[in-house]
Length: 91
Image (cartoon, rainbow, N blue to C red; front, side, top):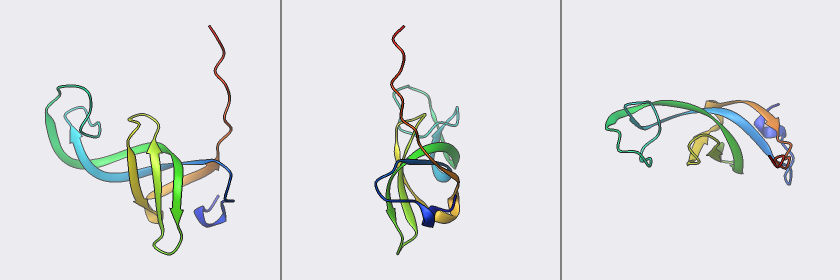
């Protein structure tokens, strides 16, 4: 699905890449560990779309793994798809 075709009011997620500060394990910094910083690098993740700016062609998303928010250009996102929210099963 193209980012320009999403319908306001529905939930979407996408894969993305962003240049950011990483620790030596390749995770976005800062994080809750005491791992040393490696420096700027390319981070790829899966994020839930929070906002879309069609004029500037930017999306704000929340990375599912790190829980960090990133602002990413349309050109650095792919595999946009609708999210189906489900309640976790009690175990």
